[in-house]
Image 1 (tube, rainbow, N blue to C red):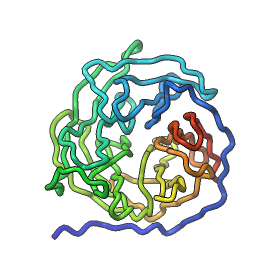
Image 2 (spheres, rainbow, N blue to C red):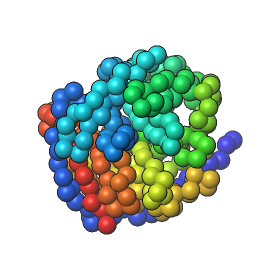
Image 3 (tube, rainbow, N blue to C red):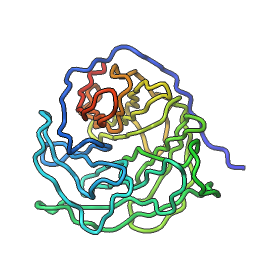
Length: 273
C-alpha cells in the first residue's frame, strides 16, 4: 500500500481580502480557464473545445491579440503554466474521467508567434476504469511550472481533496501517481506559482458555489510542504473562477467564465493582506 503525505488546511481565514478591481472581459474570452503573461499583458485560453488559440489582453479588459497554436487541438484546455522559456497548455480536462488522451502542449514564444515544441502525454496510474461518471478523482485543472517539473492539481469530486502530481517538463509519455494529497475541501480549478515572491496560489469552489483563493508562502517544490496553506473566500459567489495569476504575495488576478449569474467573463483583482 502506498502511503502519501496528507496535509490538512490549518488556517481557514475567510476575511482579510477584498476585490479591488472588477473588469468585464470581451465575450471572445467567455470560457477563460488559465492565466499567464506576455509582454507585460495577460494571456488566457478558452476550455471545452474552444479554438486552439491564446488570447492576449490588458488589465483594462481590452483584447490585444489572438495567437493560433499550430499542431494543437483544444479538446479541453484547462490550464496555463509558464517558466522563463516555455509555456505549458494543459489539455487535461476530464470531467467524466473517460479520456485516454490527456496531454500538455509545450510551446515557445519566438517574438511573433507561439511555436509548438511537442506534447507531454500522461495517464493516471491508479485509474483502471474509463466509463463516464460524474464523481471521480481523475480530473485536473490546475498546473504550475516549478524548477524541473510541472505540478498538476486534481479536481477530486469524490473527496474534495487535491492530489498533487509531478510531471517532467520533457516531451514524452508518463504514468502519474500522486506525490501528496492536500485537504482543501473544494474543487481546485486553477493554480499559479510566482518565482519572485515564492508564492503558490490555487483557486477552487465548493458544491454550493462559494469561490476560494488559496496561497502558500515560501513554497518549496522539493518538499511539497503545504502546512502553511491559507484559504479565503472570494466575495463573488456563484461565479466560475478557473484561473489565477500571482502579482505578489498580497495581490492576485483571477478570471471567471461567462455563466448564468453574471452573463459575462470578468477579470478580478484581489487584495489579500
